[in-house]
Image: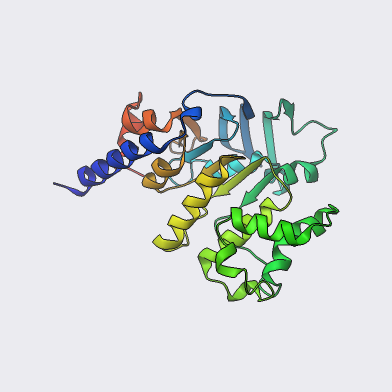
Length: 285
């Protein structure tokens, strides 16, 4: 049996396990936390995304999959206005958060980025700052005044799956942690400002399998309370952690777009577009 068939069987087995484990409350789409409406994106004169329409249900995980260069990371950065920080970047359409357009003129982007946090591909804690200091740094930088710092540190590190490993060395430098621990510390730092949405751009791509598993466990736990949108090139990861999946594609010299989206079990088990079937089965990408 070739490697593609073997990988497909493994994914289908993972999906069966996922269907058993998935929270029954997520079987039907509930309230929508965020929504992209007719979103197109440019870098200068080059159009990189075209007419993306997508809804993100509250307290769910949505995986964005597709080959490199199809606009997944660009799209996720439009969801908390990081895209606009790139010189020459432009956007058309609407990004709604709790029903309001985050790009409206009267909206403060700093406030948006507190409510819609981001975890990047490479862990980026402040290495010379303590573990405790890293967790609290988001509060200080944002000007949020909270007095219960000890509780915040314990709660966020617990939510990020790191508390038991570092509770006795909170004053150690973050640079002493392993890569997987640093990524979970970054997640804790993002959680300290109480976001409603957490964006994750390939958060496990630089991690070993054991660290990846811990991050995935953290994602599943966090999705009980917040909405998570994750870019991943790992098909098995998308199956394991997400409730919904969107497949992006970009044809040569054309902007990226969404080919198909829906429940993860449908996208991987019964896709409606042949290109989706080919991609999730590893025939290209």
